[in-house]
Length: 296
Image (cartoon, rainbow, N blue to C red; front, side, top):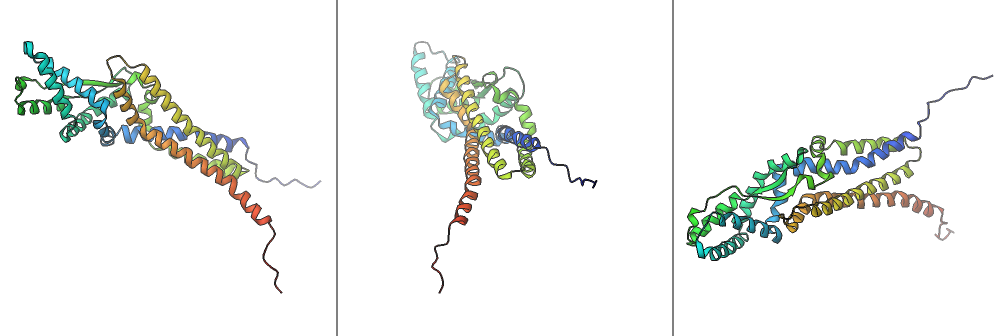
């Protein structure tokens, strides 16, 4: 009997499937880890993310109330207490519309970055707070310039306003330290696994379509998770924290996550459609008879 010739062992079909599934799972994790390391973990990026909130009405109102309350606890003018408080509140509200306020807001957020990192990196019930001392200092100077009685006696103390609590932020923040350590590597791993899975796949076109759809599903799950996290955060806030201000902060911090996830969804769906449609259009075009007139 002739000896059978053994060729190379075939790749087990399950191997590329597993690789491509892992790649799809790593896509949202890669988005999270890059966001954690390079936007929230980096001080300058964090300050730039929070800077637009200086103009947010809810945040301005929360800051104004905190600064006014802090100032008025140090002033006792007897029957004029209500009048002075009204004047201080108006002065604070006016100040929050100035460039000096935006500069002070950025300084406060820059100082708060280390506290945010501490609250996000551990498992304690830490608070995400903003120290309003730089803003209070500016208010004191403005009141002195306006000739407000007792303004020079206002002590500039560290007044912290709580905008979020780490225990309220759910799954986004539980493993924040691990995400920061991972950095870009989950995204790199997703790319490597995708390339390997497609190379090993017996039907690469079908595998490419399935992978693109899987990545779109993973990104959609990230969008849904951020929305659920926001709802849970708003429901669990203590009564003394402004929900409008906390919502504005949450939206600012997670905007990159949502935008990136939607971009991935759009690109993945377009890639899946193109991979599925282009070969069919070519095949249809090749199968049509020529309509050119015959040559004489």
